[in-house]
Length: 174
Ligand SMILES: [Zn+2]
Image (tube, rainbow, N blue to C red; front, top):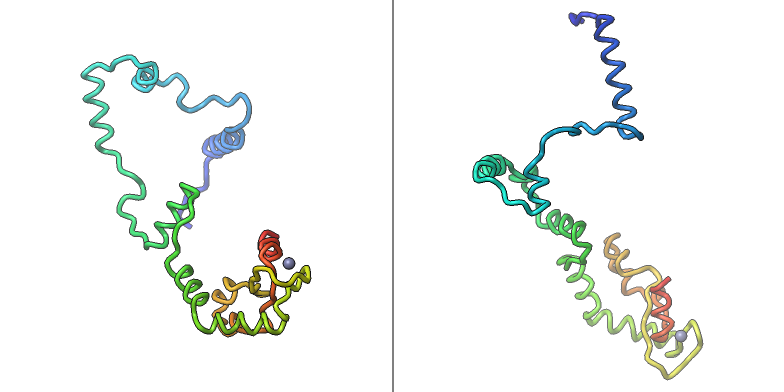
């Protein structure tokens, strides 16, 4: 250690700084920019036209500004996630949607559904209703089967239950 030990003065300064930091968001704190001239902001807000000189200065300042994310390379997925976080919209997830769609439209799916219905005698296993629109319900969700890479479970008759449409909807609302 070649560093000099902190002098008393430095120590005092440091503790002062620490104090200021710890109280910086408390009531009575004076903002760092208090009293600073920020005329163009106020003027723009008030609708007062800016002087040509101010405008020139401003455009110069703005030109130098770059987004902190500029030049950061993101994958498509990352970009979708970021946009999603900002817009709260659901994005089409190429992989999951395709996989799910593929599974649900395959011959295997059709025969799995038939086996489940036959085992349950085409009766809703929740409310015992027959002769109504039926839905095959996965006990372990398809989503989870895909996630765990256990596609055999998707077509496992033991992982299926026959439900009527309203009961199926209720199951997924839970
Ligand atoms: Zn039912």
